[in-house]
Image (cartoon, rainbow, N blue to C red; front, side, top):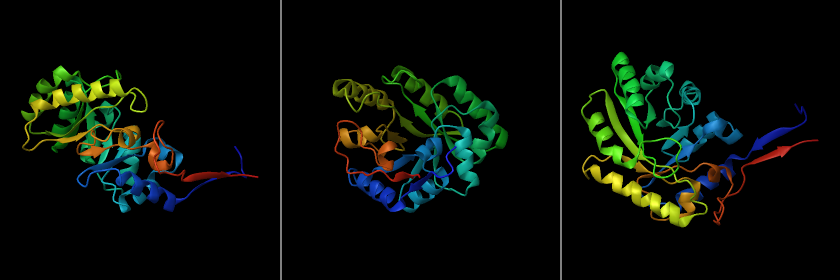
Length: 242
């Protein structure tokens, strides 16, 4: 504990970073800002409010607690829970219109039961594992999960996405991920297609053709350029101490 030390967040710099991210995007591409871990230590509630005021369309968090904290703080923008929704919190997440990520039938069924309990449709984003090897379904499982969702009235497939494992470095591996992702997307028709998203901060600045409908920048919004890029962003926090 350092009583003479404080962190100061410069909101104009943060707004400028958001504008510079936006300048990289097509007009139709939305921004889903990662505000997990208290917005990378910058203050999730204040940053989320500032982001929405600056035109950011979506927010992304890692835990149910983070998502519900934003709703309690009167953040009404669409919020996506990237981490697995705990069974005990599923009903409240559905009630609060938090979009939940699913990557397997078991978790889908948990969210479905919660949606039926509160009699409200759950908004789902299907994660496809194209090479990150962490979470998500295999590309070949996509059609079956999508069909399962389409047959249920209490769940809505709002989005489909993947994570890039090394968009800062291995261009060939990232290109293979994009190819696997786009092959999996073929099971969705052009009409009433879900929101498609893939790019993180490195994807925004290093991969021009993977913007799809939405991007998910994180660290670049707070002023740190991805490796291998010349992103025009500046740190929005400084530590002042004696």
